Length: 243
Image (cartoon, rainbow, N blue to C red; front, side, top):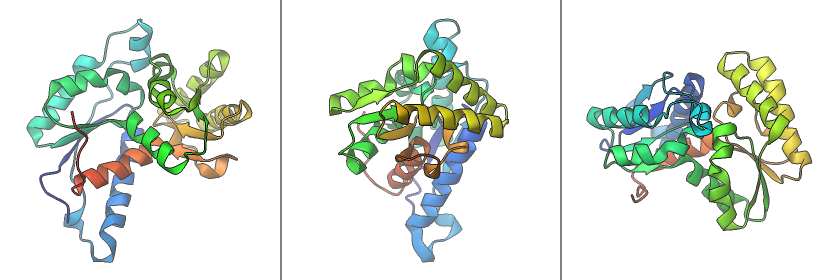
């Protein structure tokens, strides 16, 4: 049975569909953890602030727009007041501003990038070249590179025109144009494989909305799913990450 004290605070809305995808995956893994004897009341409690008005992370990292840090800090504080006992943020790019979230409350923060890289190391230790489908903010902040390189992985991320093309796909997905977004994202993923990636991380939470492991010739790691699995484990009593 879920520990009632482990209510999960979700900083969401970046974008809204990705937050809903995360919530659905939490429910899926929560039900799986319970087995046949599970009850509705035993599922993980989520307290969600789905706020699409958070300033654009790409513009902020590029220095052309305001920082989302204050908005994220305010969301974290609101979730803490609402009863959350730890925080998650199903947006890769927003982790460029994770320090603002961590500083805003005393609550443990489950770091999406770190959890994903840990999953790669645990399940694919033989892999050395890791492709990352990352938007401009995630790539420019080197979020995955800084987590992968100390573990002797080489990160391959879209650059130049390839990044601009991938961003077109992400914006299409955010706008609800899933078919066109899927075609572009799949093209971007295959380009990473062609560049030598032995594995691809869906390092943008819009990617799993249109792409799955059957679309590639190498393993695809869904960072949203990794975070959902770990969220359920922490909510059910596993020791939380230390601040």
